[in-house]
Image (cartoon, rainbow, N blue to C red; front, side):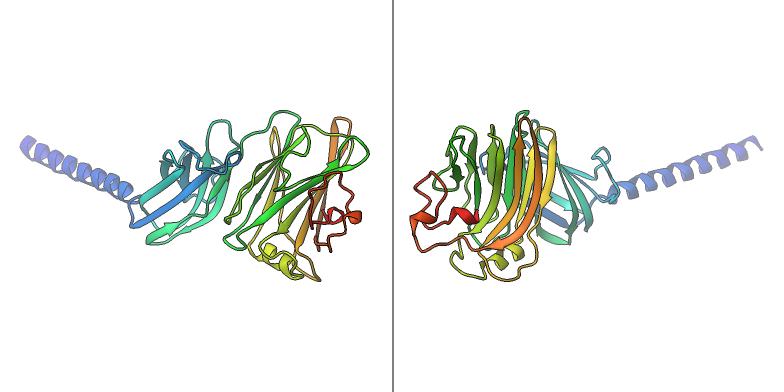
Length: 293
């Protein structure tokens, strides 16, 4: 009788052990698939790849952090990464790097085989009191340009753009991209009281009255940051009328405080070259009419 009980116990133990092993094996296999994903993480302040950034991927579409991510990958010295043997599905990705604001990307669909993620820009946190503006877009048009105008402290208005990246000590075009996708990064490190206006000009299709439509369909996106993180995101409105420039927003400074007003209209930013129409003290503005920036 004792031998029979011992035999039954051994059989039950083996069965439970095999069942437990099978569950563990199935759980592990849940994260092994036939999908691969490649991409690049970009430094907002250089326009180059960001090394040692970490990307956490999760299929939990309600996740608010990356603590239980299904996969983790790190960028190489050029900012590139490769995720291999992933399970096909829809993911959230948390992208983090020391000194940069975390970016969360939702709705990433990964299918069996090879996949490519659009370039991811991580924004370097500006110093307290500073603002940072980041423009990104798609493969076409190849060249969208950032334009910032504002009071120059002498009764006129400065004009910051690709030919005049540092019109004064308070503003700078940190990155000017001419080969698609961006980023283009502008930093406001000081200010005078008054209105500052940020616009996006379609340089690739300049002088075309319907060039604004390509800004919309690219699609372009503008993000405004302060030292605490993202302040506001701007997306171009549906194109109507005519224009080659998206007037995005205006910032009005009063002392140490500021307010942001979305404009979201299209205007033509060309002229016949008559310099009397320019209000900027910068005489290098060429054919870009500052009244439209």
